[in-house]
Length: 466
Image 1 (cartoon, rainbow, N blue to C red):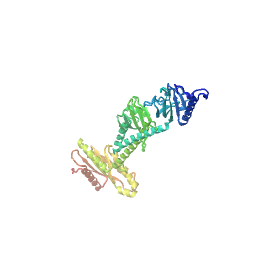
Image 2: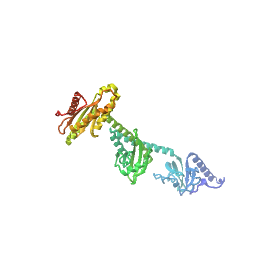
Image 3: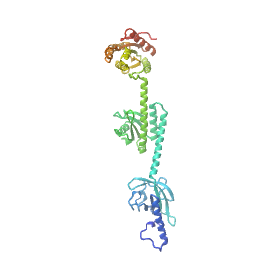
Image 4: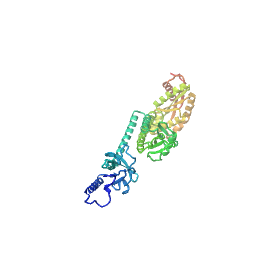
């Protein structure tokens, strides 16, 4: 080829037999055209000015037939050049399998591997280029998806590793959010309870500074029932990402991330990762709820919901230390449900359980919410009143003595034993140093003195501390 003449497409009738060299050249190029049409998804040739003079097939990349002839290849390139200093349409040396993203006529992108070589004239000057390529879009996208999945797996593995270093659910959550924040380049990560109208009040956990403006803007992105992750921006330009989720207990929560103003926007891969992280967050919240429930059950009586004996003693010991520091008294009441066994034996455990639950309700209503009420076991109960002396406790005991029997009788069938309460009271003065065990012993003895004296009354222990 000489100059920039595209002999392959020279118009006119076939060459005569008087020019065998030209005929052989044109025949050779025709064979090349036929070969590349079969062996590649794209073949091209450019002239000395870099314009396309041959493209195969005619409708390559969805362009109308002949529309690319005479055009610069830059109309096909997503970005001029490949980032490596090599342009497959203007090679300076032969190149093989140059991976390049090209733009179709409809604007969509496809990936090609192109092999090309420069065309030179008799003086070794580059007067064009010739190349062919294969569409590897499916393989490239699969490779990208595999790489993205691997990156997500690495992030999730790192998050889970950080969580495994902790035992308690709150610590696990904090470790997870810190790992997510660093792995995603987020300025902050938060877990929201979506129930409160103001999302600032619904922040359950956060890593980084929980900015009210970003939280409110992120909350506005959450669809009512849509579990899909979403992206948006705050008024100050922070890039937002939200991913809602539901726990098995029906709580709707959301993972919220944002990047600082000017940082890169969230991409599709980030949304997929956020959805996976939201699932991890959901599991941690469920684990936390289970831990709370287990702790509650370990401290409460399952029948009445009151504190059990162990939890009651632990709490009273803490209260005594505080009351001593503040110079305040405290009073313990022991309450026994009289005639409970005959009632239980005559009408069955179901009615007996109802009597215990009713007694628990009477005791709850007797004291302030900050006071302690417990079922010690069987038909024995206890009450601790902060800052109350024996006079206050006596007034409460007298109220129980008068009112409780009638309420208990209302739940029983006629003709059976009547239920009443025997109450022992032991007050503790601040600074006396009386241990909990001594206080309980005094209240217990006072209660049994009532039972020996006829039941259904109350008594105050005035014995000196032991």
